[in-house]
Length: 214
Image (cartoon, rainbow, N blue to C red; front, side, top):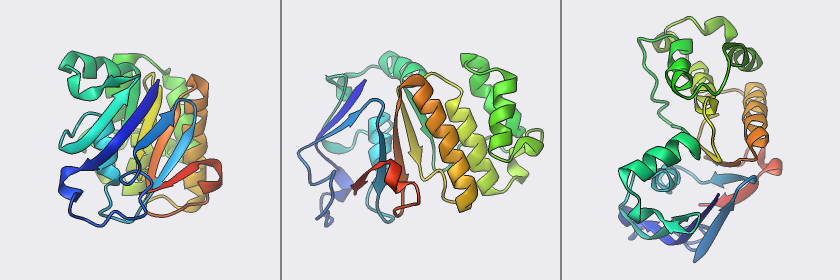
């Protein structure tokens, strides 16, 4: 699976200064399966907008986005449903967890549909991320950093060719961020999948990723 962006910019950003952007000021940007990218930019430069457009949640942009050489503007709801079940997974910046459900129940909402991981695999990942003891607590009483780790596991509970991760380490300390990245990296590598990660600034992970400034 390849993702190609051509002469893209969100319509609300057309009047903004985008000088220096390696995406908004570039004719063609290609994301290749199996490679890992860091989209680095301060707030307001369009990181979430970029991921939303690739995921088909926004269509207010100029330019074109192609998935496997097909322009996504022509995709039907059925097309998007299949792509989101099999090819694209997303860690939302806002997490989109259900506060009244436990951490494990939030994870199983997706895994129950996909059957992608066993309960033991989920528990192992939770242990690696330091949240195994919190799996049976309501998501709403967990810290935001703990919730981020729940959302990471949930996103991995499906087959995918790309994982879109929107500032998913923003409330996690450096040591746990490294652990979380290793879990994500392993999940991507096991499927030969690509990763598009956004962050406010370069991180200690930057050396392992292709960095694009937005």
